Image (tube, rainbow over all chains, first blue to last red):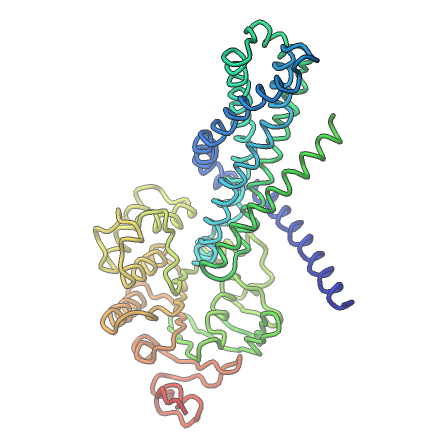
Length: 253
Length: 241
């Protein structure tokens, strides 16, 4: 029992050490601009443009549901233009960043872990090193930077989509006029709502890409190992997103 | 010159290398033979710093590999070509792009890169395959692309990890001939890890048998063929007991 606790503690400390080491390597690799800069645009396109349909699809239905649930909750007690307030605030502060983050943890994080995991088990990462490339500069930096830069862009579109579908739902199903919806939207609006959501989404992008890369590059074994890494990347990313979500709420709100 | 100095390496509780010492002189090809799991590939990976020794070191051109920092390793690796067991081609790139990647790191001009790619593919008899993806190639062709990727760099050393494993006898003979041709054309120092004795006799100037983590015997092809060491004899004759 004590041995088991000791072993787990040591492996936990080792994992923290490995994570710190990985971050240091990542910082050092940032200076290798010549290598990562030419790969950055491609990764931004893969992460940003290719993820947009999923993010917009989720946001569109979230906006519809938010408007309907707000109206259901407010009936008789709160003026209906507060539907606009709830849709706007919730999309900007919480559901836009978090739902997009969770969806992209599955899409982006899993794909990074699977891609790098396959490269690892087929010795492509070793081959890269023997060709005098640093895998951190070539594989990790462009992915982490691209995710950090593109997540706020994707989330911006998701927030806008959610608000638009919330507004259309209010017009079509709730007998709420456009001026009333906008009145509600503006009511408690603060610029902080926007940057808070975008800052959060940048931190989610950074975390998802970092977890995908760390887990992918630590892959062992063949196809089974790649499968394990993919699952692990999604689970860890989802956990970190929820923890970060709470962290930013405590620190910034 | 490459020199293994009392190299030790363990993975978890399994001691793989237990005092490997071996010198590889310039312009010779040394073949390292041994049973599966005796650490042949592990030894090879120490030469380019892909693995860090528990004790001992590998000295390449007077530099202890384990003491090199990232920049030192990068410079060392620029002089070494590595041919992986399963070729390790980048599967999202074409054959030509696989060859170009290492050359671009050396900041050569575009014309020279194209020339070297053409030359290397011609040397491995794969001219005209530059636009194909690795998935479209046979196992033997992939290995030849792996060799082309290494020789395009014009390295001082080429390391071959099980170059003929999994290939039919004719394709194996083609790869052997290619390794000999590469040595003759480029005058490179070679280290070949294999358990294919026919290949070892064809390409090696000397053969070293790795057994229980260290060199059991090293000698010329003739010396190994005539050895009286029972362990080496059993291995080279492929006798089960």
